[in-house]
Length: 61
Ligand SMILES: [Zn+2]
Ligand SMILES: [Zn+2]
Image 1 (cartoon, helix red, strand yellow):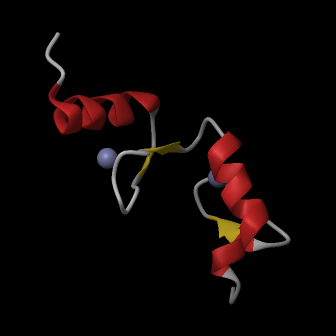
Image 2 (cartoon, rainbow, N blue to C red; image 1 turned 60 degrees about the horizontal axis):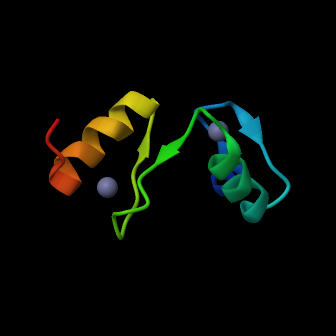
């Protein structure tokens, strides 16, 4: 397993290029990336991302 940069461990899927993998992460509901952080984290669920964003942006409901 040398080409881990082309492999999505979360979805257990391989891709032909790192770009293809990036595209997959953008499109997949299995990935929830924070677009507000400079070094984005990939959250497992939308809920986790929401939680993070609430803390980050400081929205109070
Ligand atoms: Zn994936
Ligand atoms: Zn963030």
